[in-house]
Length: 204
Image 1 (tube, rainbow, N blue to C red):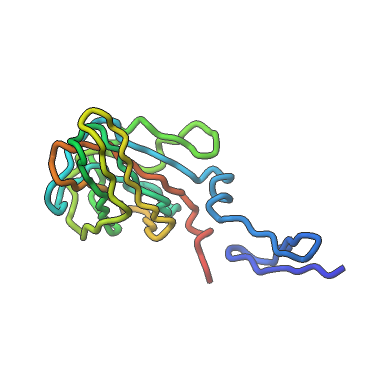
Image 2: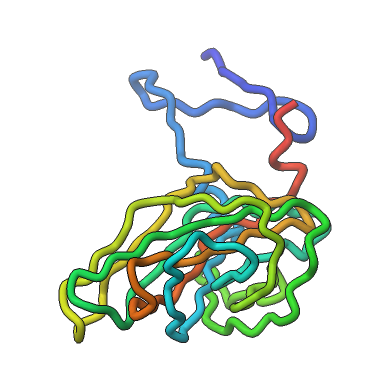
């Protein structure tokens, strides 16, 4: 019986490649593996913050900072939930990636955190804070906009499915802002990320 093996992307040696009885290669999404390994985290603010009605600059609604020395934060998604609005109020998500060496956020007061593998959340992984003064390293709109239906019923949700297209090495960060047609539109927002050991992201 032949055994097919592949080369590891980190470390040395080879590992078996699994197939079904009919020879179909068995694959699993890397994000599922990272979740099983306990690398997945979510954090969000709970207070309502007014949307901007201009392009963001040096104030973030929420900032995530990589305070580790040996992990990269692979951003899975960013999201914003509408709390107060007007009829047909619209808002969208803007993100700004801050390069390594950014100023460390002054607080770490976000208590709504989850580990995505059923463990107690490790609040030491990542600094998350609201209303931070940040460098304007370039803001860009991400994801689709949300639209509220009435002035009294919240619930519109906008999310940016980043899917790993933003990766934060140690001392780098990311900020989010909500931009709408009026400051009456208020939102809470957050991030979903994977804290992946740096050596597991090596590709050569």
